[in-house]
Image (cartoon, rainbow, N blue to C red):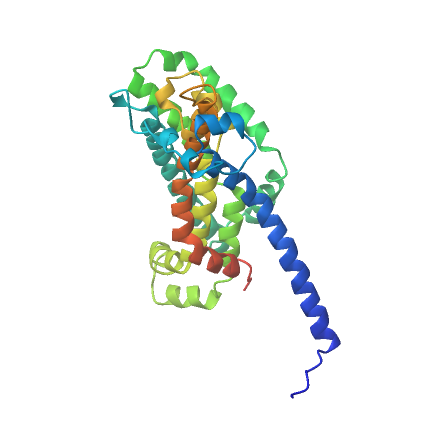
Length: 305
């Protein structure tokens, strides 16, 4: 029999640290997954099961599984359900926010790294300082300005009011300091010789930006898309302030989740859970599209050239 190789002290320490890290990771993942499993299982429970076994994760028996809580999401009582409008509102406003965030972060980060201008260091310091200020303070001033033009909105047509309200919803969310600094960190890892070589060949800033910088930044762009999409899709406080008093069909999915119910009294919990599961579909799609590039982006933004 071959003698068993004894591990060195450093190998035993590394193995112990990996084991502890794995156990902690499994425990944390279980904490995050349990509410999702409960939400998923509850959405398939019958009204009777919701009443008799509300604390169980999944239906008590196979005959208690039902899709009734998912019915009517598209057509209810012969008319288009509000769920369709909520999903459309959330999808286009989130897509607009993501586009503005990526475009703004790319342009500003390029100016911070590759252009020379007075006050650049002060501007970077001000951005970092602004991150320490609670976001609710900016929300308060933004809503105060929105309230000052409320009378103007009331005199507009429904289409104009919808456009103005969603413009006020999307534009303030069109960038983020964290994402901007993330992009700046990646740009700082790009060798300066590469940029100088392009300039010596006569390339303009527009050419360098679109032909050189943007293609190199794809991993970080995908990471920012995931972060900004998740933040915009799950945003609740700001849309609730703007859309709460308006037409129910104008709401985003997160605002609607707080009040969307249906069926019997016990069935309301099932419908709410089913709606929550349904609203996770776009986030899951974005995650599966960006997950590979997300890892590359997290690695590249952690390297400073």
